[in-house]
Structures are given as C-alpha cells and as structure tokens.
Length: 240
Image (cartoon, rainbow, N blue to C red):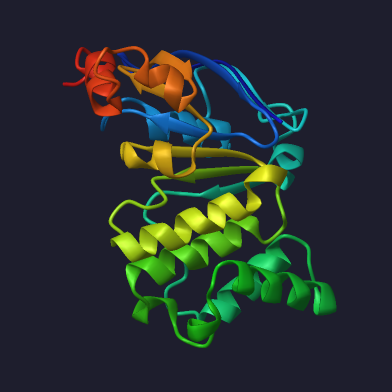
C-alpha cells in the first residue's frame, strides 16, 4: 500500500535523507524510529507531498506522489507533528470544514464527522474551540481529521509526543482499532511506541536506514535483548 523508493533530500550541501527505501503493507504498523535530526520528519514530508524530494519517489496505493499527487493524497491520512489546526474553530466546525475539503457534503459529511468524533473519543469537547482544549484533545482532533476520509494509508509524526500516560494510551488504542484495515507509519523517537503498537520497526540515523525488522528481531541484535541498547548502538554514530 505504501512503497518508498530511494528518497533523497538535500538542503544545499547538507544531505538530510540518503536514499531511503521501504514498503508498508495493509495490516502493518511501522515504527519509523530515530534520534532527533535523523531525517524522520523530512522523510514523512516527502512521502506526504509537503516537501519535494531531491530524487526518488513514493507510491501510495499505486499512485506516485510526484506523478499523481492528488490520487496519492486521496488515499492518505496525515497527522503532522504538533497537531496544527484552526484553533478558533470548534472541534465540530473544524471537522466539518475538513469533510468539505475532502469532498463530503450534507448527510455524507455529517456521517463522516459523527463517525470520527466517536472513533477519536471527542464527544465531550465537540462544541469547544480548539484553542481551549488540552494537548491530548487537540492531538485527537487532528487524528480525527486525518482519518475522516477513511484513508488506506495513515502517517503520523510523533503522535504521542508530549502527552501524559493516559492520553498516550487513548491514542494508542485508536491506532490499534484501525490497524488491521490500514498501512500505518508512526514516526517517533519514543521507544515504548514499538512495544505499544508496532508490528515492525525501522531505525534511521544520519539519513540512512540502520535496521528493519519486528520488535523481536531488533532485540535479538544485542545480547541484552533491550531495545534501548539496540537503538543506541545503531544510532550513536548518526547523532550530532
């Protein structure tokens, strides 16, 4: 459902992403792990069409993000880092706006909005403005907009960063509930996400893939069996 092909991104003389390739199938939850500055967000932005690659491309449900950007984005849900939104809107009005932007109107729009409000556990705050919400509810509001059109591929950049333990648990439960029907990528530097929701993890450092496997396979890379030790060993050379 998602195929990334030799993505490269240069900013002047600095090469932030150095030829990354991977695939994600339906039913997989891929943890895209790396330290800060590893190239995770840059890679996500190229896949989602927010940043043009220097070379390489990605395909979403058979639609090339460069040759057919509209077709690719119709199959894609994206939760960027920091959950951007129109903070003066109420939760319901924001989701109605997103529904119309996605081509839903009237009863169809109402049905989609009602469904994602339920999925994202937003009923207690639907009539509150986004600027008054806790970070957890703001994150869930943007999660709702990302899944409103029921995309086949869902990409989330640091979806639980800065949330308290209860808020993290809620977001993880929402991910698990839809995992079987989608290809999901979670970009994060939080190792506990791997055990919590991921079926597979890819480790990136210095703009390159250092490892790709199930959580068990990654743990087997060190006699300690500890993921934090494996992560450190794989990424310490790429941290600045």
